[in-house]
Image (cartoon, rainbow, N blue to C red; front, side):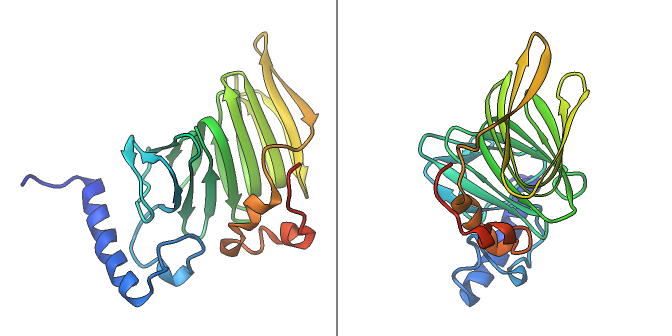
Length: 230
């Protein structure tokens, strides 16, 4: 047997640690796990899987490690959560493809297509890159739906976000929101327009389902207890 790759080594390490954790507590490798469960060194992990979910075109399972440069994708009627210790948790739904980079240093998530909801630790920076805009996020909850290269829907559910043209780097808009401020972002004749729109595609329930990991960042949604579709 030849030398194992970095991913294989990490998977074996995580697997051994995970097996030990599961002997103590069979619920350690699921969404909502406690800080004490993060005993094995890792950058991120899959904490929820529904349907067809892939990491670099290989079938993903709960507990799988996410490394820099990994591409996570979902098929029809599918969904996944990815947790990053002390930093964020994000949820993707069907027909979505994202790439994660620099996840513990200067984190960046590239949303190539589909449905993406993220909770980010308060006062923590993150970049969300789409074909239309680059979003500089400063905590706490944000939603993106990428239709194609020229059309994106975005909601600043709570927090601060600065939008830039993904091609030119031009600053487009600085947004601060306490509760669901949504925009349609469209590229026409080379320029990107930023227009207020109604909130759609996501629900408070999508956020509240992940709220146990980040109670401070999701307090406003708990207070509203609104739920339902917009």
